[in-house]
Length: 340
Image (cartoon, rainbow, N blue to C red; front, side, top):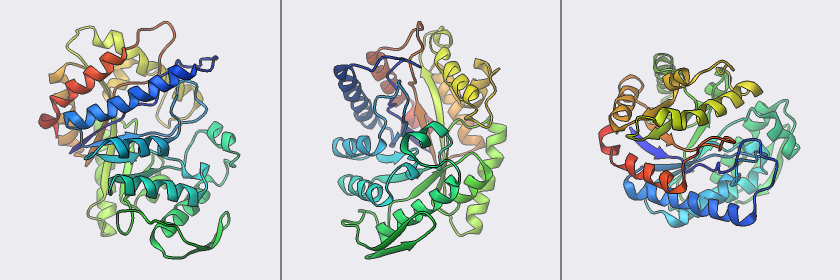
């Protein structure tokens, strides 16, 4: 099991009204890069980068620009988008940008992609919410075709191209691996057309384990023996006995956001901290983390697990300092060999 780290792009306060000051945004970007470089230094295997839009707490919304920066300042770690919603982008332009990241990193890119389920994002980019699945499939066909064909032609319902030559092609041949972020059955079926399934906010292990096994078996039936199961996991590592009280509110607030908006298929507004901890969250000391990730490895054995430690600020609630955010990355580095 390889372990990735998400240098989170959340820095602001939930539902803040004021636009952040330029210097504050620049400082936050510097810190995001510092987290990523430290994660590589302490031994993480990868860095995963999200794409988020129209959220006042998100100060680095564009995944491809951050991936390009990290390609330049790291040497070893895998770089994955988890996940880009490609229908918000021009397919050929996105293919070019990702190919540049793959070349700059000398073949360390994984293209994580998802249909998207946040209707406000679609409105932001003027993309119709209906037929989003079909549009996603066409965008993916266009990106793969542009990456792998010397001259690309395509005639679909939404996209038409003749004689496209994308230069340069990606560093990896025939192309970078693709993971599909998916909750719903149809989206999970799409993942089987590619190299991996990416799941954030996973359910409890007793539910996750059979789902992962089913995906492996279905992938094997398609002769995809290297199909990757990739899982997101969240929390804070600390010896402080009050870690739950100091940090748990951040995850309760975020989970409530998804529940209130109806954006998570499993979330209920009544979710409490102990329920979230049973699913995808660990708040505790070194041994608690070793035990939780050991159980994940034993029951699910994902190929990749990504740890996220930071999410938006709750007004009036304590939030870790940037020094503490770096210290927790170092603390995770001390247990990586025990949990892989």
